[in-house]
Length: 288
Ligand code: MN
Ligand code: MN
Image: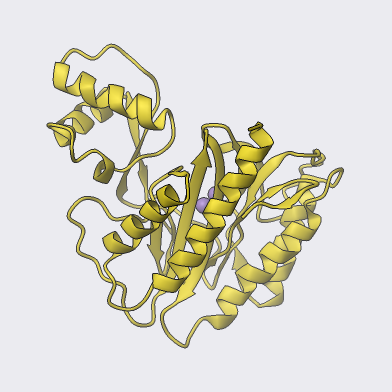
């Protein structure tokens, strides 16, 4: 299979996993059960998770995900962003859906969904990247909400989730033209807050930065496993529980700068946040 076919297959898997997530995301479900079921679904469909599934609640825009032993439960009224990535031979697709667990915030979700639709229409060969951002901002403003300017879509590549270029959620002045078969993820966020995120608490998701000699044998085993299974894609400690002393190893590796940990991304002013995301192959269409 060509790389192009792998992206298409990956997109189909991400889309099916997203539809499945939307179905099973209900009040009373544990976050950890939701992410583990969706990750399992990705594998059943013939892909691998490109990153741990995120379940970001209310004013957390992104990067909230349960770690080992998490007991949080989905609650009535919450605005839940489920963010999912799959890869086939490293070809990453990225998609997200907002699920409302109550009667409120329908228009906030609609703002993000409309923005994504408008952005996809702009994602044609030869169009300027700034026009995607412009369409997103206009659609969200149309619903009287704010776009989140310091979060953006991105190129998606082989073994890389966040590749160049940045696909902005506002008109950032980037006159670069989209090219045929370029693969990108578009992800508008709508909020009733100020329209920015800040770094929150560490979220328990890591990624390998560089391979460096490791002294301790048990730590070396963990880093070898990470490199073999995930390369530089983000991973969760939930995926390492079969390895001896994995928690100790992660601590050492983080201290030594071999791996880095991500943080949650809450809206700066505590605003409510909805997100929509799909991956697109320019000139071909929506992958997810
Ligand atoms: Mn995503
Ligand atoms: Mn993304």
